[in-house]
Amino acid sequence: MMGHMGKGTRAAGQRGRAASSGPSSSGPASPAPQRGATEQRPRKRSSGRGATFSVFVMTMAALVGVGLLAAQAKATAPRVRVPIVTAAAGKSSSKSGSSSTTTSGPAVPANSGSGTRIVYSVGERRVWLVSSSTVERTIAAVPGTIAAPDGTYSVSAKSPGATGSDGVQVLYVVRFDADDTTTTFGFDSEAGITGLPPAPTGRTGGIRMAQLDAQALYEFSSVGTPVVVVD
Image 1 (spheres, rainbow, N blue to C red):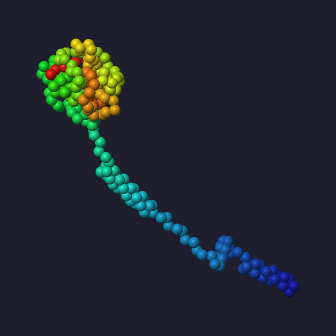
Image 2 (image 1 turned 45 degrees about the vertical axis):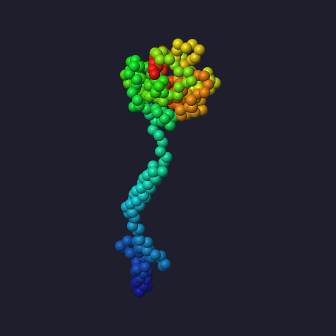
Image 3 (image 1 turned 90 degrees about the horizontal axis):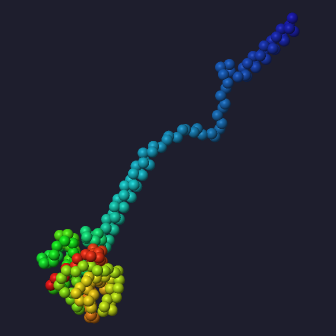
């Protein structure tokens, strides 16, 4: 009887110790924190407003710098002459090539005919390019040593370059017929000289002008264009 009770008492005691040392019935036990471990807190996200503001400030500073550089470049840039565009030739020219090239110079002589024509005044040393009733260009000219007689002629030939009767190399040659068959009359410019050329010394009927003016006359005229020579 006592032996039976002893076995039962020992069994009950073992069950009690096992229950007390085992896991809690409420759930699994949390692992114990390790020594030396620091608690890590979640970092706050940095706002992007600061970076956006910095980019804006840098952009504005760059634009201001570009504006200052443009203003300095405009102030220090060399000035150039604006070319004059003629309606007749449709080309541009510059006053640097002629001292008297203009569209508002002396009026075309009254006794110079009408319509589209080239008018040359020996006394005024000037040429007018007239389109219909409008003076498109007036040109200072240097007469040849042989003057063309007064009268109405027409352009007989054109050449971009030639040798004058005085042996001078000339450009933009526009010849017109004349009564004097021993002399060829025409308009041209002296090669190598951009402004008004000096008065010729050899025998020539060439009426010379600045290269840009001669080019304008060359492009204005065509074979058959009337040429009116007056005093």
